[in-house]
Length: 296
Image (tube, rainbow, N blue to C red; front, side):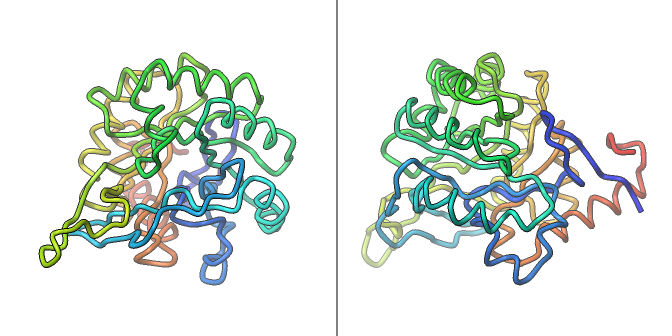
């Protein structure tokens, strides 16, 4: 047995395997197939102040070594989330990190304030990187100034640990990482999806209802590993790696690149208990290489 317990920004986890926002909902469906208590933490689907209908279909297209999605942050709003989803999650023994999204800085701050009153919530992941909305999301994350303004406003609104989720759709990830850290982020998670497109050659039209979508899966892993490597050396706060993690070997790449934890995303659509597979692989690697990673 290998002890894989870690702590990120004061959030204590049994292991470094988390689930990525938007790929696991709030765990309700997955709880029928796996023990959620085995996770290091759960990051919920993005929550907004008011309910959102999301983007028009089609919303998902499978690609070579990945998928495009254009969900558009569909959710039932913060009131429903607190009354229903948090109530469901209260039965599990693991940290709950809530991913928040807004169209304005004020919305982000209000969400953080509301969640700060919920004892079950152990951290907030600030989504400034979603490419599938016309307002907010990536519009904030591609600007150092707007990144700093959003994180500073959320920092002022709550004392909960803050994780800034960064977009890869920038020229230099390190300047965005520094802006988030200097504004008060306690950790960074990266990367979110890359903007992509798929065309139906028979109709000549996009296969997605919103023209473009976010590319995820194994195809983006080399980009994600590189950006995690760069970001982890640009800031002093912990970095969480995301992007194409399908098994333990993929996760170890991120950990060797400088990540302190990982999030499993697209793999959840392929294998219902993918996080457990990833965790097992990390444990086996640490057993073979006890000094390669910072676990006791």
